[in-house]
Amino acid sequence: MVWAGARGTTNDHERTIPFARFAPLLDCPGVTFYSLQCGERAVDLQARPDVIDLSPQLGDFADTAAFVSQLDLVISVDTSVAHLAGALARDLWLLLPYAPDFRWMLDREDTPWYPTARLIRQTRRGDWGEVIARARQRLEERARR
Image 1: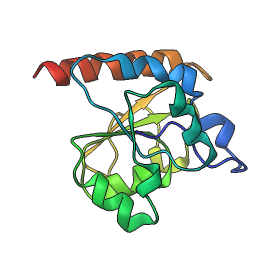
Image 2: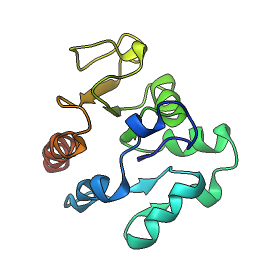
Image 3: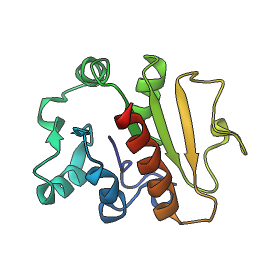
Image 4: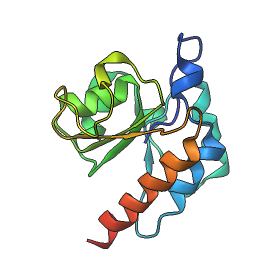
């Protein structure tokens, strides 16, 4: 999982989910979470010792790709990790703001860029709660299977 982009990026305030808003997803029963979040925002995990923090082992994209290739699913905001998971044809749930980057188009849950990606979009600007609730519901269904 990745909940935040790099600070200073033009649209970071739109694509990053504050960790407190992302955290309800982590209470999904039967799921083990691995964090691919790097940088200063990885410190958010201090409040969640149940999440396995991979950031100390992520030196470059080759390291990240090695971990991503072993995961059942990557849940991410629009970051390089999401693109890496898509390029590796791994299952990806991409959490998108109301007005996403052009490449995610509008009004669809799939993307021609990455056939294994599912797009979960805000239906109201700034409403990450709804996005997390839908992702959690899908994750609970997936965990039951």
